[in-house]
Length: 268
Image: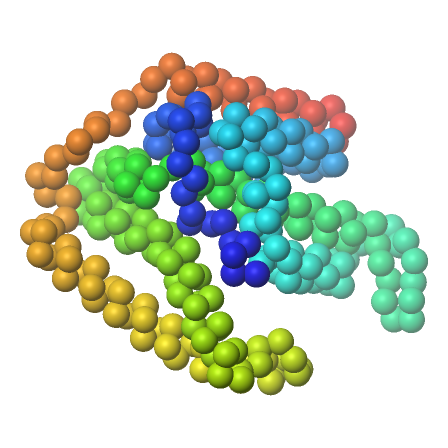
């Protein structure tokens, strides 16, 4: 399951999506997510899926690889679905079983909230898979630069967010190594009830936290040895510039949002 997590990983390439400005990719990802939350019917989600599939094909990433990143989130998706089914009130009953009544409104909300969560994860994964950690840091910092007038630590915050995102695959790899070492010593992580499984995770979590703190300390020492002083007077090898690709991508995303809004009004 650990190998199925794609969030935070970078897939090198030279596609149109890879060559886009990271600032534009961040903005368009947010716009796409907002567009998904504006959808209120099944045809709208089919439009969102079609748009996402087109972007994935252009980026050169296999769509199956993107779907694989949803496997570790199956519990959260199912849990969200069940919560909406059980606790959302409605006026149009579908069937009644004892004290439980499933309504059309509850089923509607359950399906749509689960789909929103799926598209949220997949859209964010496309961003991280096509943007290197350095580009992501520069894009976040440039977008938050106007806040520096209010003494907002834009560079520091962007650096922390990118480091945290970049260390997800590293910590997953470390977790897999520790888990295999513990299993070779007789540890069992897959049998028993939920409480027993949670107790079995303690021998895994302790060395993982120790390793994470050690890596953080090594990173801090390496940054200090290279005279890292934050974003003050920092120069860059490649300055970010918007190109025609960014303009075309913005127009395509704006067209997608317009179609979603129009479709919602016609069918809503």
